[in-house]
Image 1 (cartoon, rainbow, N blue to C red):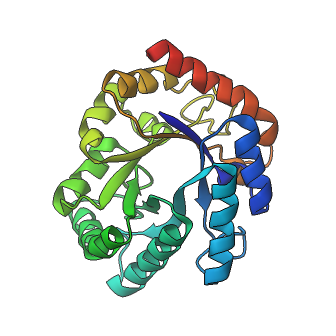
Image 2: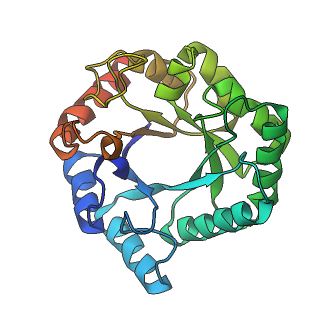
Amino acid sequence: MKLAFSTLGVPGLAVDQVVRLAADHGYHGVELRACAGEEPVHTGLTGAERAAVAGRFEGAGVEVVSVAGYARVARGGPDEPVLADLREQVGLAADLGAGFVRVFPGGGEGAGPEADAVAARRLAAVAPYAEERGVRLALETHDSHPGGTDVARVMGLVGHRAVGAVWDLMSTWRAGEEPFVTYPVLSPHLGYVQVKDIASREATTPLPLGEGVLPLADCVELLSRDGWDGWLSWEYEKRWYPQAAELPELLAAGRRVLGRLLDESA
């Protein structure tokens, strides 16, 4: 497995700083949060600016794993604004050499079959465009679809190889799914896995990896046992928790924890 971290943990840092943090601490890639006005990488960048960002990562031997966008594919309303957002995110990902565009469900409380169908319709509509550009749309286990079984329902309706899933371990665990339940239903669709740590289901302030209660070892063991060879990305949600420790000072220790888990599961 290859190791990455998300720029959610280092909000607003310049691209060069993000690249240096990854390279200096032994991470193979980075999830780039793409939000105009808050992050240096977003869909408003010109072609030359995108090429410069891609060049900085490539020059350091660090991959852009994903453009973490905020399209909510199960949300009510007209399709076209959501489709336009997805296409813009796919274009950005392709220009940066990223393999994925992360999207959210956003179906709202009590979302059911109708929300599944809306999400599947929109993802299927953009899937050929994404495939042409070498990008996969990856629906995260989140909000209205927190469990692997929830996202798997949507995947079953889409049935396109350019559409996959992001397994957010915290989300599925808080929804009551243990890894041995989540992995089998998501494995046919799995794009990459986000890991993190927290104190309890209610206390979600991010903690250093290995200092909380999330079943990290179980997750990594399942992936390793099945020979899964994708991205394991540390999503440290510092942006939403000002009281949390700064991520840069935790990156070295987090890399050691992930390395140990990989060694133990080999």
